[in-house]
Image (tube, rainbow, N blue to C red; front, side, top):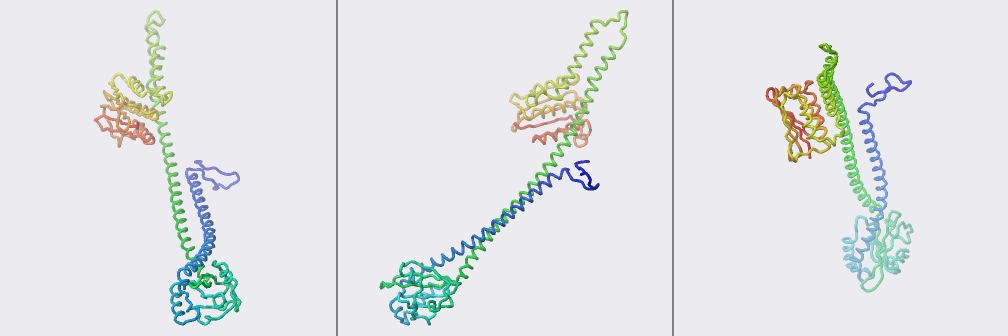
Length: 448
């Protein structure tokens, strides 16, 4: 019972919950599943992105190092190479070495060599190789021929690679050609540590990866918060719908009880009286009903039928949006007992939107019913006023009143309490002002 079912062949305690929390739990699992899927997708894309970015950054950093060598050669070396340096003058070598140390040497520098077109090393970081002649490496020859920067690496031939310590498979060799001030072509060879260049790229990768992880964390956190908010809102909405359904059911019970009381005290009593009068023996010698007697019975039957029709119209108007509020209010006042003085006051510009006409009708109906049955009021005034925010319905009597905080839960006033809940659900405001011995005022405000 109560939202559970049992599978055939299962144990007594093996049930599946189909209650109020199952939908929320399903939504929670869906949100969690989406969050986990997002996490997996972000991690996968991030790893792939970092892998690709690492390769691209390594190539970028290598090219940047090569361009840096070329720029520094163009801006510095080209103007500081002199004939005295080529001839091996110690003072010129010392001055040139100072320039190289300041402008050329970097943490990534593995080795340096200044080649003449004859294959002689005019300058090197290691003075032991200065002045020695070797076969020009292919890259130096290509640089001299094209006057374009060439790159290479991985030399293992001692005859062609005197600085064997830095000419290795892990080195990147850059050959930057230039023309001296006296017109001789030369090549500046710079060996770069591939590992150092890679580390620079890796540092950039780490920075970018951290920023990506921070962005992904913020995205997942925001998604998680939004998911929890969605589940919480869904649960609140379901709870509100359950509460509203319960209140509607309670109102239906009150309505049915009120209908039964109205029929019993009105139509049923009148029809019973007519039946008793018809069954009573006719006095006199003539047993035939007189014309006046028939007319009286016909009048009573018509009044009863009219009352029954009025109650039927109150129970279910043809279309809520087509209710003429002013006419409906006047009709309700016309059907009140003769001992109750009534008054209807309507502003000329007062207008009730179609969406709220049924609510205005029901509030007025319930308020008048309470006046007739409980207030003992000699007078009731119904007003329909134009307000800044919309239209206001006021039902005011000068009866005995009641205590809203205590008597509102009694059967006689339960209808207004339920209507207050309905008004709140519809986004309107229903208020009741009353005190014992001071009458009652019911006020409903609906938007324009």
